[in-house]
Image (cartoon, rainbow, N blue to C red; front, side):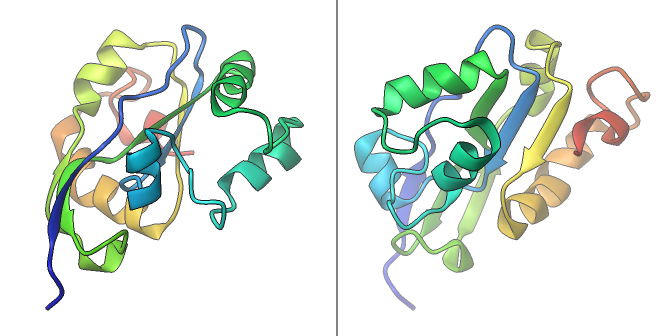
Length: 148
């Protein structure tokens, strides 16, 4: 098995008016090194943002983040830490999720969570959803309000 290294995620990028939170699984090596979400130029995330919101993918990172805040979109990841080989989601071991119960209690304006990819979705379903328990709908903690 290839050598695993411990990865810790980036801080959430959530503006005061964030209504939509986009979650990846865990930033890749290039993103962690640059301290920027979706820093790998081969990742199509910023192309999708440009198509959806007209935010030029070639703008400086902080300018793109500010533009995302203006359209009420935030970024974070499902996983807080994990071990993996390079940036490979397929080699993730020892995954620990971020504290979404706390996040949604302190950021009640978040209305929709969008999961970027099957790895993010699978870890959300396995690690995050059980922490919500039987929270009633429309409290910001139940499955009815979390997935979009």
